[in-house]
Image 1 (tube, rainbow, N blue to C red):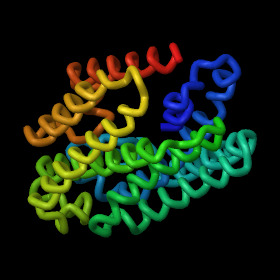
Image 2: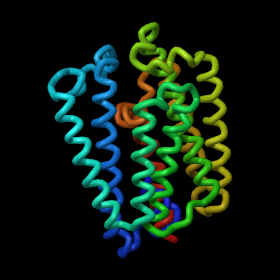
Image 3: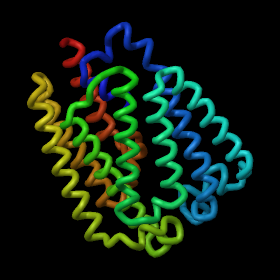
Image 4: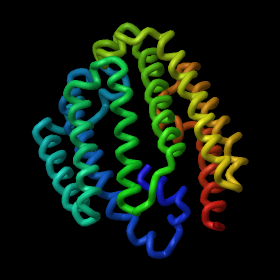
Length: 263
């Protein structure tokens, strides 16, 4: 997400930009990892009831809660140091991302609708941080596409969790009990359609990218297909475990990269 602004701004492949990629990327990786470490401590009891998350280091008992907290603090401090080396506006955005993630972990993830908008806000902060790090303005249509896509993926993950956990879902993620399945399906279809529309409008203004629209459409349909048929709704797992989805995603990335590189 950090690299979207320089990618679609057509400067990602410039020699002077390549050397600037590492620090922002590492800073956000460390910040996200710090949040995951703390979140795993907070959710250890609930994760122990989850068929997959029970194998994580903290809920499984392989790592103590105190050790995880210390690791999280150290990762956050390293993220702050690297973020400061990029720029102060970038650092402020990084800290805002950490604060939002912390608020989500402690409270906001239990409030219906607010939880999925928090996840989306995290994507947008990373997108904005990328624009600050590489001094590229984010297109309005790209902003909307990322915003709606993150909502779409978050809703799909909620549907998959609700289907996988069934009656025990509330014990793992309390907010699942508050979501009617009809609401989740309806909002997934709605956001999926609007993602396609906003991306198409964005692409129309960029010559050479028109052929990526069918790939985007296929990717959205494939993800919805996986969610509906009770497969994992986690975007990362879907991308890495579904060879068709992974192939389409790589093809999209290659087409976009080649087109913008030639410009």
